[in-house]
Length: 180
Length: 199
Image (cartoon, rainbow over all chains, first blue to last red; front, side, top):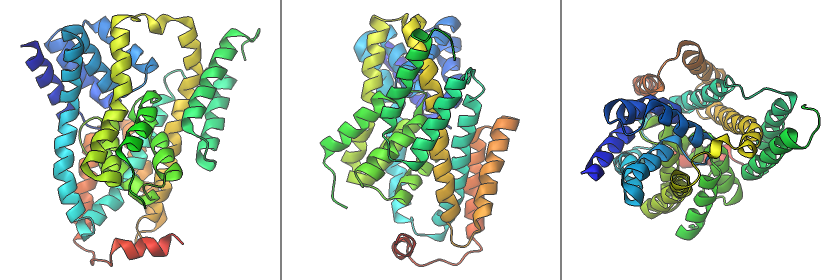
């Protein structure tokens, strides 16, 4: 029975979760903390914190974690598959329509508005992240500027940039006598 | 453009999935680098259209992005392996954490590493936002570039200043786009347009 519940909850979250990671969190919290009580509020806060230090989309992390704690490996697979299933179904429908009408004036007009709108959404998400106490020192601002410039104007692999930033973060906290 | 093997697509997305800190948006830079700049599987414009589609639809953004770019590269199978590759690392890692390392985040080394990673991730989200904005400013031969800039700024003000939900903004944008199309003449095909643009 737990598999059915897991499937149903995460299918709903996948279907109605709009607008990416942070926007989905309140929906996830409503289901797994308030409704099913699979996690307490403080466990949920822990989970969010863990999600921030592990790779992957926050909703996938949550689904995997709750599935695992409720019903082991199979539970984690069921929850994650249920979360992703609406994406798959919608893709099949949307692509059929989109590819057939890609050159219609309606689709091109919608796309030409969506491009600047989504650019605005991404930039807004980046701006909102700046508020979370990330830029606490000259070094962190420096990392931001260097990564931004390198990513915009060179072909340096972003994965390398992340690894280098991690090394810098470790060094400024551990081996320099004075905090910069 | 040569067809990509499913294994190569899976491998590229697996690598990206393992380094996606800070949510799906942080993935955009890596996907762009892997698919457009390194492998040349997609053109610039195709890529940004996939991003717009991925964001406009419900569901996990990172998974949508993998599905749409993967589909463009190698059909339904490409979409499947791309999404599986993107999600697999986080599933494995979270299962490990759930069973062994629950207190990982309190670890001092992890904390210090992340003081470096966080500003990097913010930059890795800013950069594709700016690149997409530049593409958006060139995307429509009829519309002046500053209109696209204005639209993006308006969206940023609505989200950051007034806490608007992205859902309504996206739905509103799609409706506006459809209405505006009523007054337009159908144009010549996209193929010839791309050719003239990318010399």
